[in-house]
Image (cartoon, helix red, strand yellow):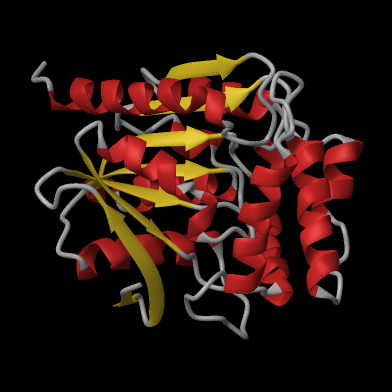
Length: 276
């Protein structure tokens, strides 16, 4: 995979789709690598006339692993730095979970770089955040195991816990994806530094009320890690934002909703491109 020098670090990235299509930047969640955006989902987005860019956040996957603490604003600057390196003036920006936190900050801190904003199963951070359920907190704070097999088993367990009630658990599929991620890179210290960045972040609802970028908020109504009230609050804060609540979806973007999510993102892009 190619690597880019961006914001003083190296970021591993991959591109799907036509080089002349509208750029769409995918930002992954806490501890997640770019492969958490399923290959087939990326191809599906590319089929909607997007040039899809996924990348490893700092301290995850094959991007630079850090030592010192950093903020979500630093991670937003990484995303902008990647766009700069790729020669992309502005992109449709899509983030899931922590990636949604970062995507919101890209839009707030660098609005000229964002054509549209899509925030998936995410929230407003800080005192504005509705906290996880006890079960969600247990998943978040599970200790990092030592062996490869224990790491895979923890990932499978966490995925099963976070799925919504309308999403049957496909163990073979999920295990293969988790094995790929564990074998590609495993960085529990990076997970903790990212989590510290989340915990230190200020609430954003007041700032989001000033945002004037076409915005889509997608959230499952059965999310135990980032409860749906967070998505509702983000959507209510951003003028004109569209909220899509998906029944029975947990903290995941399951295959059954891929077409719906891709269609919503494409519709937002068309809306933004239509002169008022």
